[in-house]
Image 1 (cartoon, protein in one colour):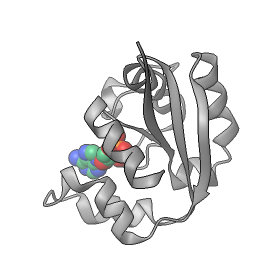
Image 2 (cartoon, rainbow, N blue to C red):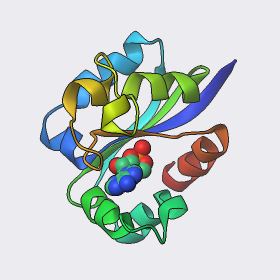
Image 3 (cartoon, protein in one colour):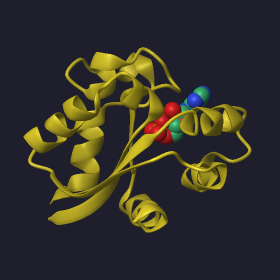
Image 4 (cartoon, rainbow, N blue to C red):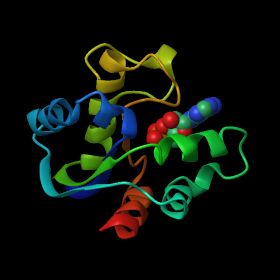
Length: 132
Ligand code: CMP
């Protein structure tokens, strides 16, 4: 089923000049970019994006990293887009990442992991409403 999801190229992805590479891989999977913009997030927006992690020991570090430079916010449409974008970006935990995924190919780190994609249909709706 065609659906929409939210992807964010994080500050390290932008700094490392991986915007084109990330968009290429998503389009290769037949995902359609329906809206895209670059923003340097304010602290409250980053805290809202990651509100499900509030109270965890890595929350402040995660927010500081997310506001450390510009990010690219992307609205995507495609077949099972939530699931397929997660496959393209790769796993959260470094030991589970497969070569061929964006994180598997470009990041050995847990926090600085290049790109975010909404993890469920509910999160996708909430995150798209936050940024678009
Ligand atoms: P992301 O998939 O964007 O969603 C939450 C982010 O929190 C995750 O990527 C990582 O960047 C970060 N994260 C998740 N778990 C941890 C952890 N245990 N320690 C530090 N950062 C984490």
